[in-house]
Image 1 (cartoon, rainbow, N blue to C red):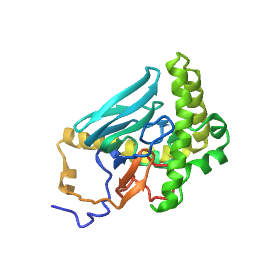
Image 2 (image 1 turned 90 degrees about the vertical axis):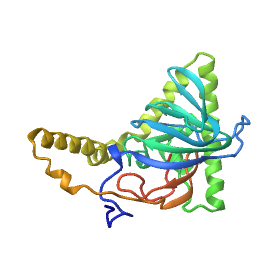
Image 3 (image 1 turned 135 degrees about the vertical axis):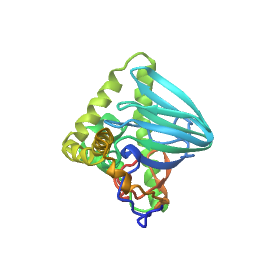
Length: 256
């Protein structure tokens, strides 16, 4: 059966993951590459499921610099601390699966802005926040934000390819300092989302083991459609779903 609450289901997606759809930006950056705003996540692993077109994702990690090809059917994912930059080839379209739904929208993602911007929380917030909506002013601000992130990213990449991982590690430390005050709120989101989903599975296993699977009487199905189209995300134009714990209402703050 399909629940009457199809548009606002009371349960998160499986495993309390986040979900969105992206079309990579086609704006050319200072290095001649078209694509999104480089950034990292502090506590969330992110996965790209490529549904169309082609391009790549550039990453910086202790592995060094990598340029991972993306094409329809590809799957790529990266763990916390990995700087990643989506690169547009031709009509690159991706479904994004995000660990710990709600945390990226709460600031878990940090742009690779230059060090002087990262060192000043107010300056960082001003550079990272977009005007509401999807109009020309928002597009201009999103492109300016992308260019500033690329500026910092290119310095990190240049140092890393020269064998110097110091600037990359310094960026990780700066990102961690920038979000430290938010950790208590993140912990509550995690407890209500990903941790609660895992504990719910544990309770179901207990019920099965005891021979009393009464929870199966609550079985149902849900359906949803994107609630916001063509938003300006970090990597590209973003379609979002207003599901509990999945995507918070758009307020101009950074999203993936």
